[in-house]
Image (tube, rainbow, N blue to C red; front, top):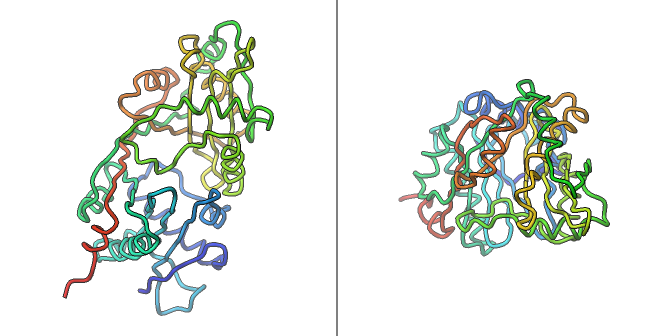
Amino acid sequence: MRVREWDPRTASAAEVHSLVETLNSVLALDLPDDPPWQDVQVREYLAETMPGERRICWVAEDDRLPEGESRVFGHVSILLLGDIGVLEVLVHPDLRRRGLGRELVAVAARRAYLEGFSSIGVEAIGGTPAIGFYESMGFEQEYLETRSVLRLSTVDWLALGEMARGIAPGYRVEYHPGGPPDQMLEAYAQAKLEAPDDENDLDLAPRSSDPQRLRDSLNTLHKRGLKPYIVLAVHEATGVVAGLTEVVVPAQHPQRADQYDTIVVRDHRGYGIDRAIKARMLFELRSAEPGLLEVQTWNAHHNESMLKVNAELGFQSDRDWYEYGIDVAQLVQSLEPKD
């Protein structure tokens, strides 16, 4: 087995396909209810990043075959953003508990250290071996969310229609597939500033809250094969974006969409905006994405108001989702080979 730095832009189609096969083997064991990935825009998903960010990847492969033809048994990437490196590790279930995962983490940690980063964060999913794996290396839990999943086949569409119409007078609801028009980005960015600031969140996926960053974010989503859908509540008297909700449908698993931000501006809370815009979103998705079966969302346990709205819409709690962090120098030192 060899580990080498790997560029998805120049990787062979066979390598990318093998990586997807390994990913699906992991999903089948660890998250059997999650949809398998399709080999669609995976190269772009891994290669494209926001301006100012970089992702560096390595693969573990069969060293008996030449590069480009070998099977990929493991993959690690580190996304360098702000002052933190965000780690993702993948090891085929047949090769677990043989030290390969630790070797991949060590390679990425050394690069982060050389690049001058002081901390590494990673997501670990409750009920999977990832929890024990990261804790064994000294990672400490920093943040907890719960993932909930809505199966569209269970939606009460009549009740949902009532929610969609339940917004107070003086607001209009707008639907923007692909992202809002450029002339609305300033108002959209202003509303994004009201996202709750959780001091314990490691910002492994930081929000964009100024117009240019939003343009860049939307462009990057499209390049990665992630199609955004936006629903806005606009206060008609002022033109202010009073609320927004975002859902992204990935080309890699189009049966299950990802909920991103849902925000209601403080001065406009209590008018039914959150339920109305999320209900409207589900109607639009049913029409725009006929192959879509599920929507998944993540919420902190203290976000009681959104948890209540999601429950009314039909979301069911699924798994806990943890963020772990560690000091880079500490991690590098702990993973150095012992004499």
